[in-house]
Length: 193
Ligand code: MN
Image (cartoon, rainbow, N blue to C red):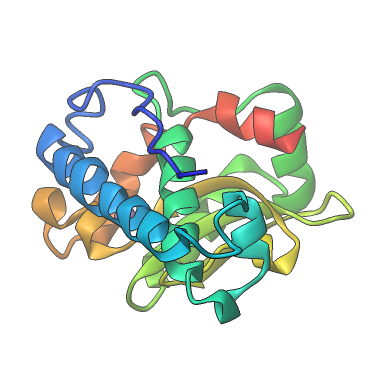
């Protein structure tokens, strides 16, 4: 079963001015597509070929295909974390869960921005839920994915330089400010369950 790249859930220019069509054309069309192509080449003809992305990620880095499997998963999760109709503050159960865990939306936003903004090098900033339903903010290095720690991802931001360098150069804080204008709270609600 070959892994396929899901269609972007919006047009490539739909996230402008925060994320440009130029960035998405490379990020979705080259980086994400490249991880999927390498993943398929690596699992073809092996006993890993029938496994889902989640199953490959759960096996951890020892399989040798972890990086491409997790980057495939993480990027699809990132596209879905964004929406041209996103931004603002969550409502309903997401607001309740965030307020319960962090005290306020502003406190959550500060914690998430700090985790993503101070993450050293390539990686990802996440809002996650543990098996007891507790929410927390974390970051992972390179292809790291919370699924390997038994955590449920709720929201992600890509902080690899390729996610923002064309639009913001070294200014990751400006990219993160744009990210908050795009957060797809409906997707977060869906993941919260
Ligand atoms: Mn990326």
